[in-house]
Amino acid sequence: MSVEDGPDGRLIITFFAKARLSNISTNTVPPEHDSFRSQSLACGPAFSHLLTPQIAPASLTLDNHYTIAPGIFQSVYNISSPFPKPKQLRQHTSITAFEALHSLEIIFDVIPHPPTSPLLRPLRLAVFDMDSTLINEEVIDELARSIGITPAVAAITERAMNGEIEFEQSLRERLRLLQGVKADVWEDLKTSVTIAAGAKDLIHYLRKRGVITVVVSGGFAPMALWLKEQLRLDHAFANHLVVSPSNATFPYPHLSGDLSPDHPIVTPEYKRQVLVSMASENGIPLAETLVVGDGSNDLLMLASAGLGIAWRAKERVQREAPQRLNGTALSDLIYILDGQQGGSK
Image (cartoon, rainbow, N blue to C red; front, side):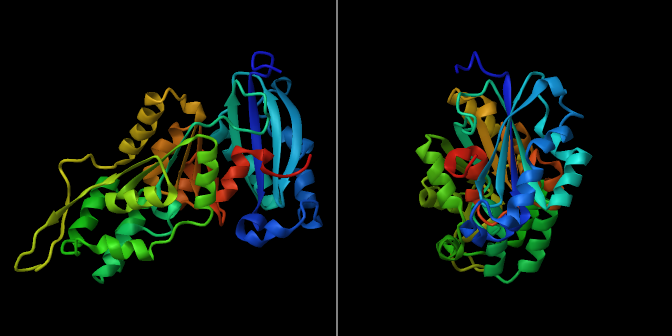
């Protein structure tokens, strides 16, 4: 069937059992295991009636329902325009009640003019946050740890990521506290910072599909460039810091506590602009982009992407992001992008 002969769009709904998200060992459980059977049944055709408050029944046809891995189910619907907003679907009271009742997290993805394959999401650009997303740590907190001021800096970081204070203001406040950190601190951090579980598998999958991969971070260029090399990403964007020479107070090259005036500051708007400009430069429609992040400074780019997923995000971000997932391994996102990776009809 050609694209022209197909539906106006496709709604792909991926259901994750919370038991699966919180316990990676469920990967070894057979897909038909009783522990997930009732959830799979609940997510099948009977789920359709929960969508009708926002999608006219005549515009919605269930194509198929799959178990694609233990505790992960996917339903594919053909839909007619006008298309529903995935965020509005996720946040509808009937859906949130269903999630709570069946211990699920649900991802909604609307694909205009879909390809022939019902399970392979069109995707050509993927943009990731770095701290607490592709890596487990907040680098600025690790810098603070190196000079023993973790609580003061971590408190500002937490407020910034929750959106309680403006990001650039919080960044400058924290950097002032870090004046005097040794300029070679990055080498120590490269041995202590840990790459998030599943990140290598996810990036490997994206690279195999020819997807352009980008990290854009409100953190710092030395670590973003290091991560680019570790994961073989295509591009890295982050903040640049001023290094001062030795002086009487700090008898070694050190961080001045200032951002470089020669480079842009990675604000929430800058992150969004990286997504938009990278897509434009490569002739990629935003509908074919993925964004993954965890902080309030990621919300603008999450909202601009074809599929924006808040990963293990701060409370405010979970509420406001288009979609959210709280798993143990980023590789779970592969099931959202490609249901053909496993499972049975």
